[in-house]
Length: 298
Image (tube, rainbow, N blue to C red; front, side):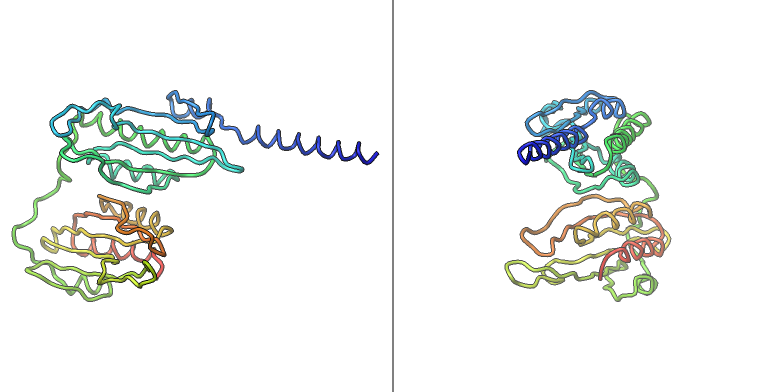
C-alpha cells in the first residue's frame, strides 16, 4: 500500500513537472508573428534568436565595404525563465537613430544597458545599443518590433544618416551666466572663459580602497554658448539601479545620450557612466539635469 502511494505521489510530481516545463516553453510562433520576422531556436541553450542585418546603409571600415555578416546585424534573443521570458539584444544604429530609438526602447519597457562603438574609421559612424528586459513573450516581441520599426521610420525619412544634431550654431565666444545655473543645480561650479562646469563626486571601493571625485568617480556637466543658445555635455556616474531612471529622465527632457559604459572593473558598488549632449537655453538644460540628478540615491 505504501509503495503504491509513493508511486502515485512520484507520478503526480512528474506530471506537474512536465506541465510546468511545457508552460515554460517559448511561444516562438507568437514571437515571429509579432516581430514579423523568422528566427532560429537553439535547442542546447533553449534560446530563440531573431537577427536583422543592416543592409539599408552601406558601411565602410578603414576603406573596406563591411558586409553585415562581419558584425552589422541587430539581434534579439529570447529565453524562458520560471515565470517570465527574458530578452537580450544588440541594435546596430547610426548616430541620428540612437536617441529616438533609445526613447522607444525605454518607453516600451526595455532596459538600455550599453551604448558604444565596435569599430574605428567607420563611415558612416556605427553605434551599438544593448537592450534587455523581462515580461511576456508577446510584450517583449512587441517592444523589439517597435525598436526596429523606429529605425525603418528614420531611414525612410532620410536614407542617408545625417551628420549633425541640427539647430543654431554656437558662438565662438561663450558667455554663460554661472550664478543662475548654480541656483538651479544647488551647487557651486567653476567658470572659465564664459563657460561653466560643475562636478559631483560619487564613491565606490576598489581593492579595498575608497575611490571618489578626485579619482574620476563623478558626475559632471559643462555649459558653453550663451544663456539663450547653450550646449551642455557631461557624464553621469550611476549605480546599476540608477541607470534606467537617469536615462529615462534625460531622454524625456530631450538630452542626447552618446555613450553608456564602464570606466572601472571590480568596484563595489558597481558604477556605470553615461555621457550626454544637450542643446537649448542654459537654464532649461540645468533644470533637466537637476531632474535627472534627483532620480539618484544620495
